[in-house]
Image (cartoon, rainbow, N blue to C red; front, side, top):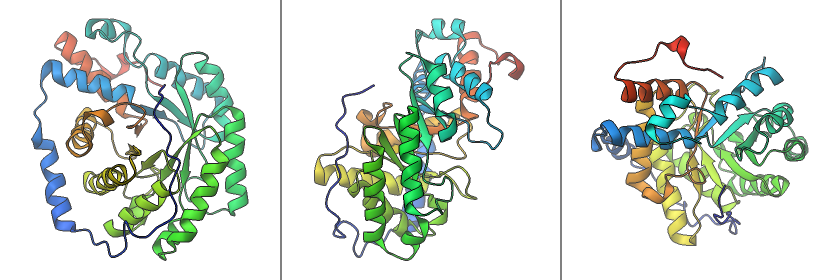
Length: 316
């Protein structure tokens, strides 16, 4: 997919966040302006929505997942937009960035995607809570990679973050990064459980120092998932890390992004904070299951002038 340099990590240091205090009102004011900063209409809006599609990690993480469901998900990932709509938009061949499944479903996803070039991401490390002994979490990573996953979404130990045990958290994430081998690693911070923006910023820096290729907001299972304010805090950390090391780390909001407007807002935030170079699948992903349906509906309206009935849109 990309020749982007992987994040090799850096030695642990508290210099980037020692004494850090996030100005919460300022963050919230800035985030509140994002939906109004760019008015995207017609062809521009359609182009941004198509870009959102190529950045989606199309996801199924349900207790009743089956190989048949995963196969349907993969078929949707291969053809996320109806062929006639894609042709009218000039985006034939458009696919999602990846599919994201549980480790036991990785092999089915790899088989269904074949040589499409779509990556298979797997959650691991006792997702979503991460409350398993570290050796078992590492074994789950290795299992998913052996099954064919090319990306691993790990969850951090929220307890270590809440207790301020940053060196211990760094060591755990380093071990996870090593277990990933050639697979790229996304570090899920579960920001809704970290309580403060200060903790979110510190966890972001620690995950990047430990070699995370992306940092991700949420599992999608918390009470509070991706928000524009928490995303802003994480993006500022990514910007600072890139400025200090020359290493570009990606970002993945997940949980609660359901509408085409959400997809536009998060892309505007990415462009405003990190620039257009980050608006590509190797540096930006959206974790979603229902978002694609609304994007397809909006693109259908752009091409035909009317909204398609929900039952006419192929679903995963």
